[in-house]
Amino acid sequence: MPAPRRLIVVTGTGTEVGKTWVAARLLRELRAEGHDVAARKPVQSFDPDDPFTDAHLLGDATGESATDVCPRHRWLPIPMAPPMAADALGRPPFTVADLAAEITWPVPGPDIAMVECVGGVRSPHASDGDAITLIEELQPDLVLLVADAGLGTVNAVRLSLEAIDRGSHVATPIVVLNRYDPTVDLHRRNREWLETHLPVEVLSSVPAVMNRLRPN
Image (cartoon, rainbow, N blue to C red):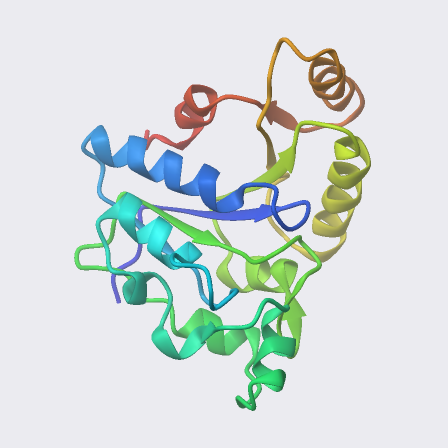
Protein backbone atom coordinates (compact mmCIF):
# COMPACT_ATOMS: atom_id res chain seq x y z
CA MET A 1 0.00 0.00 0.00
CA PRO A 2 1.37 3.47 -0.83
CA ALA A 3 2.51 5.55 2.10
CA PRO A 4 3.09 9.29 2.45
CA ARG A 5 6.64 10.60 2.57
CA ARG A 6 5.68 12.51 5.69
CA LEU A 7 2.73 11.74 7.94
CA ILE A 8 1.39 14.41 10.28
CA VAL A 9 -1.32 13.95 12.89
CA VAL A 10 -3.31 17.02 13.85
CA THR A 11 -4.90 16.95 17.27
CA GLY A 12 -6.05 19.64 19.67
CA THR A 13 -6.44 20.73 23.25
CA GLY A 14 -10.21 20.47 22.86
CA THR A 15 -13.19 20.89 20.57
CA GLU A 16 -13.59 24.03 18.46
CA VAL A 17 -9.95 25.13 18.71
CA GLY A 18 -9.62 25.19 14.92
CA LYS A 19 -7.96 21.88 14.03
CA THR A 20 -9.75 21.58 10.71
CA TRP A 21 -9.13 25.22 9.80
CA VAL A 22 -5.42 24.89 10.53
CA ALA A 23 -5.05 21.58 8.70
CA ALA A 24 -7.00 22.78 5.66
CA ARG A 25 -5.08 26.04 5.45
CA LEU A 26 -1.73 24.27 5.64
CA LEU A 27 -2.74 21.65 3.08
CA ARG A 28 -4.02 24.30 0.69
CA GLU A 29 -0.78 26.25 0.96
CA LEU A 30 1.35 23.13 0.46
CA ARG A 31 -0.72 22.10 -2.54
CA ALA A 32 -0.34 25.58 -4.05
CA GLU A 33 3.43 25.15 -3.80
CA GLY A 34 3.19 22.00 -5.89
CA HIS A 35 3.39 19.34 -3.18
CA ASP A 36 1.20 16.25 -3.44
CA VAL A 37 -1.00 16.28 -0.35
CA ALA A 38 -3.77 14.19 1.14
CA ALA A 39 -5.95 14.34 4.24
CA ARG A 40 -7.78 11.74 6.24
CA LYS A 41 -10.27 11.97 9.10
CA PRO A 42 -10.80 8.36 10.19
CA VAL A 43 -14.17 9.11 11.79
CA GLN A 44 -16.33 12.19 12.12
CA SER A 45 -19.44 13.08 14.10
CA PHE A 46 -21.35 16.22 13.23
CA ASP A 47 -24.59 18.15 13.41
CA PRO A 48 -26.76 16.91 10.51
CA ASP A 49 -27.88 20.50 9.90
CA ASP A 50 -24.32 21.58 9.06
CA PRO A 51 -23.97 21.89 5.26
CA PHE A 52 -20.27 20.96 5.32
CA THR A 53 -18.43 18.44 7.47
CA ASP A 54 -14.74 18.44 8.35
CA ALA A 55 -14.25 15.89 5.56
CA HIS A 56 -15.69 18.36 3.05
CA LEU A 57 -13.36 21.14 4.21
CA LEU A 58 -10.27 18.94 4.18
CA GLY A 59 -11.17 17.46 0.81
CA ASP A 60 -11.64 20.93 -0.64
CA ALA A 61 -8.12 21.79 0.49
CA THR A 62 -6.50 18.68 -1.02
CA GLY A 63 -8.67 18.18 -4.10
CA GLU A 64 -10.10 14.92 -2.78
CA SER A 65 -13.70 13.90 -2.24
CA ALA A 66 -15.16 14.02 1.25
CA THR A 67 -15.58 10.25 1.18
CA ASP A 68 -11.90 9.83 0.35
CA VAL A 69 -11.11 11.84 3.47
CA CYS A 70 -13.53 9.94 5.71
CA PRO A 71 -15.14 6.64 4.69
CA ARG A 72 -18.87 7.12 4.31
CA HIS A 73 -19.70 4.48 6.90
CA ARG A 74 -17.71 6.49 9.47
CA TRP A 75 -19.92 9.56 9.13
CA LEU A 76 -21.94 9.88 12.33
CA PRO A 77 -24.63 12.58 12.06
CA ILE A 78 -24.95 13.36 15.73
CA PRO A 79 -22.65 15.78 17.64
CA MET A 80 -21.14 13.40 20.21
CA ALA A 81 -17.81 11.65 20.62
CA PRO A 82 -17.71 9.00 17.85
CA PRO A 83 -18.22 5.85 19.96
CA MET A 84 -21.10 7.54 21.76
CA ALA A 85 -22.57 8.73 18.46
CA ALA A 86 -22.30 5.24 16.99
CA ASP A 87 -24.10 3.78 19.99
CA ALA A 88 -26.83 6.42 19.83
CA LEU A 89 -27.33 5.69 16.12
CA GLY A 90 -27.42 1.94 16.63
CA ARG A 91 -24.17 1.40 14.75
CA PRO A 92 -21.78 -1.43 15.69
CA PRO A 93 -18.79 -0.53 17.87
CA PHE A 94 -15.37 -0.10 16.27
CA THR A 95 -11.77 0.06 17.48
CA VAL A 96 -8.86 2.40 16.84
CA ALA A 97 -7.22 -0.44 14.88
CA ASP A 98 -10.33 -0.56 12.67
CA LEU A 99 -10.03 3.16 11.96
CA ALA A 100 -6.31 2.95 11.22
CA ALA A 101 -6.76 -0.03 8.91
CA GLU A 102 -9.28 1.91 6.84
CA ILE A 103 -6.83 4.72 6.06
CA THR A 104 -5.63 4.43 2.48
CA TRP A 105 -3.54 6.82 0.42
CA PRO A 106 -3.58 7.69 -3.28
CA VAL A 107 -1.02 6.17 -5.62
CA PRO A 108 1.77 7.14 -5.52
CA GLY A 109 1.93 8.10 -1.87
CA PRO A 110 1.60 11.85 -1.23
CA ASP A 111 4.50 14.06 -0.25
CA ILE A 112 2.66 15.18 2.88
CA ALA A 113 -0.42 13.63 4.45
CA MET A 114 -2.41 14.75 7.45
CA VAL A 115 -4.69 12.74 9.69
CA GLU A 116 -7.02 14.88 11.76
CA CYS A 117 -8.29 13.63 15.10
CA VAL A 118 -11.59 14.52 16.73
CA GLY A 119 -11.98 16.72 19.80
CA GLY A 120 -9.09 16.90 22.24
CA VAL A 121 -6.29 14.44 22.90
CA ARG A 122 -8.38 12.42 25.36
CA SER A 123 -11.62 12.58 23.40
CA PRO A 124 -12.83 9.02 22.67
CA HIS A 125 -12.32 8.04 19.03
CA ALA A 126 -13.44 4.43 19.26
CA SER A 127 -14.54 1.85 21.79
CA ASP A 128 -10.97 1.28 22.95
CA GLY A 129 -9.10 4.54 22.62
CA ASP A 130 -8.68 8.23 22.02
CA ALA A 131 -6.43 10.51 19.94
CA ILE A 132 -3.36 9.27 21.80
CA THR A 133 -4.25 5.67 20.95
CA LEU A 134 -4.60 6.65 17.30
CA ILE A 135 -1.23 8.43 17.36
CA GLU A 136 0.38 5.31 18.81
CA GLU A 137 -1.23 3.21 16.08
CA LEU A 138 -0.15 5.48 13.22
CA GLN A 139 3.34 6.44 14.47
CA PRO A 140 3.42 9.73 12.56
CA ASP A 141 6.49 11.75 11.74
CA LEU A 142 5.06 14.81 13.45
CA VAL A 143 2.16 15.77 15.72
CA LEU A 144 0.62 19.23 15.65
CA LEU A 145 -1.22 20.18 18.81
CA VAL A 146 -3.62 22.98 17.96
CA ALA A 147 -4.60 25.28 20.82
CA ASP A 148 -6.49 28.51 21.16
CA ALA A 149 -4.29 31.52 21.88
CA GLY A 150 -6.51 33.05 24.54
CA LEU A 151 -7.56 32.51 28.11
CA GLY A 152 -7.07 28.99 29.44
CA THR A 153 -4.62 27.84 26.81
CA VAL A 154 -1.66 27.37 29.16
CA ASN A 155 -3.60 24.88 31.26
CA ALA A 156 -5.01 23.12 28.19
CA VAL A 157 -1.64 22.82 26.49
CA ARG A 158 0.09 21.52 29.62
CA LEU A 159 -2.56 18.87 30.25
CA SER A 160 -2.53 17.80 26.61
CA LEU A 161 1.25 17.52 26.44
CA GLU A 162 1.36 15.52 29.66
CA ALA A 163 -1.23 13.10 28.29
CA ILE A 164 0.62 12.67 25.00
CA ASP A 165 3.95 12.21 26.78
CA ARG A 166 2.53 9.49 29.04
CA GLY A 167 0.61 7.69 26.36
CA SER A 168 2.50 7.81 23.07
CA HIS A 169 5.96 7.10 21.74
CA VAL A 170 6.42 10.01 19.37
CA ALA A 171 8.47 13.16 19.50
CA THR A 172 7.15 16.08 21.52
CA PRO A 173 4.40 17.76 19.47
CA ILE A 174 4.64 21.21 18.01
CA VAL A 175 2.11 23.54 19.58
CA VAL A 176 0.20 25.68 17.10
CA LEU A 177 -1.54 28.68 18.65
CA ASN A 178 -4.57 29.29 16.46
CA ARG A 179 -6.23 32.71 16.25
CA TYR A 180 -3.05 34.29 17.60
CA ASP A 181 -3.03 38.08 17.49
CA PRO A 182 0.32 39.69 18.35
CA THR A 183 -1.46 42.90 19.31
CA VAL A 184 -3.30 41.10 22.14
CA ASP A 185 -1.25 41.20 25.33
CA LEU A 186 -2.71 37.93 26.68
CA HIS A 187 -1.82 36.08 23.48
CA ARG A 188 1.77 37.30 23.62
CA ARG A 189 2.11 36.42 27.29
CA ASN A 190 0.63 32.95 26.76
CA ARG A 191 3.10 32.22 24.00
CA GLU A 192 6.05 33.55 26.02
CA TRP A 193 5.05 31.47 29.05
CA LEU A 194 4.76 28.28 27.01
CA GLU A 195 8.09 28.89 25.30
CA THR A 196 9.83 29.69 28.58
CA HIS A 197 8.40 26.93 30.77
CA LEU A 198 7.83 23.98 28.43
CA PRO A 199 10.24 22.04 26.19
CA VAL A 200 8.07 22.56 23.12
CA GLU A 201 8.19 24.50 19.91
CA VAL A 202 5.37 27.04 19.86
CA LEU A 203 4.28 28.44 16.49
CA SER A 204 1.63 31.04 15.89
CA SER A 205 1.50 31.70 12.15
CA VAL A 206 0.85 29.66 9.02
CA PRO A 207 4.24 30.57 7.46
CA ALA A 208 6.05 29.37 10.57
CA VAL A 209 4.24 26.04 10.53
CA MET A 210 4.76 25.71 6.78
CA ASN A 211 8.51 25.92 7.29
CA ARG A 212 8.30 22.86 9.53
CA LEU A 213 6.12 20.84 7.16
CA ARG A 214 7.84 21.16 3.81
CA PRO A 215 9.69 18.00 2.74
CA ASN A 216 13.46 18.21 3.15
